[in-house]
Image (cartoon, rainbow, N blue to C red):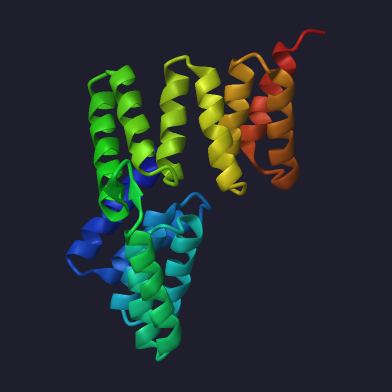
Length: 236
């Protein structure tokens, strides 16, 4: 949930709200192509494709949203609508059944679909606290959000960044470990995990995390910079 990502999603929502579906698709594709998009972005991309008359691409995006968040009720429902539109009625029935089963679950005694909305509201409140400079209160709001939506790893990543900013590197490391466990291909999460390891005094783990990133992507300038910093600060 860095500033650029938030800006792209917000602009896409604006385009969607005025029925400029191709404009929304363009913005969301820019985000998706970074490899850092989460379920909400793929869900909105799927809706945009569907309303633009591209059901096949819509299904691909909705499949990805559900892969990232299997409990995403709206994504299951909209996937069923798209499948039905494609004439795949048996698969559509399965999708609608999955939506009903998921919506019957609860978090903290709250129906899952309502819990998800509340989680996002707590995250928004957390950002309001960030804007006012109240990081401890912001962190608490993100923790409540994750109690309501433990599979919302974009919120967990944001929590980790706030914990780092607050000097709570061990807690940040725990948050990033969960993010990376869920999304091993999320480069930002892995880079942040390395930073949390380093700041918590575990240089060996930081080197391992950043080294793996540079092996997979030799052009990852951030990981290379972190490794260079590590070499400069390591005792001879």
